[in-house]
Image (cartoon, rainbow, N blue to C red; front, side, top):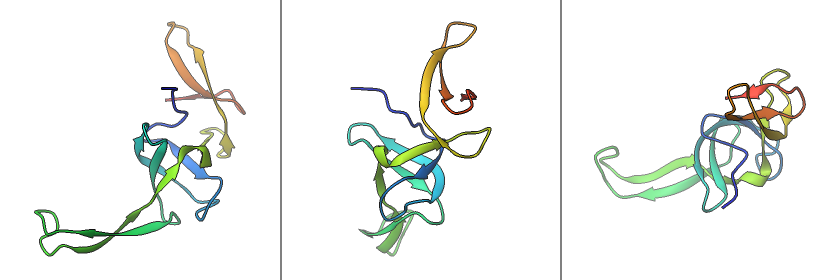
Length: 108
């Protein structure tokens, strides 16, 4: 399977779909489904029916973020604050690192 351009903890912008233009932090990535859960105020929410459990003793309907296809997400450049493509290169120690194509800034 190919490597993904986003990781958990990245700040991303939604480029297409109902939440277009919204920014948020990636909370979880599903590489087998090519989707990610993005946490943010303008992100589309879905209603999920849950049974009673320890965290939610009453059960009921819970609102949570909808999974978004990773092709609709772009990482935010840490230097400029704009969406950018991601590249991979070797650093001084010979380790592969991700970097922003616009500014050349290394992304952790």
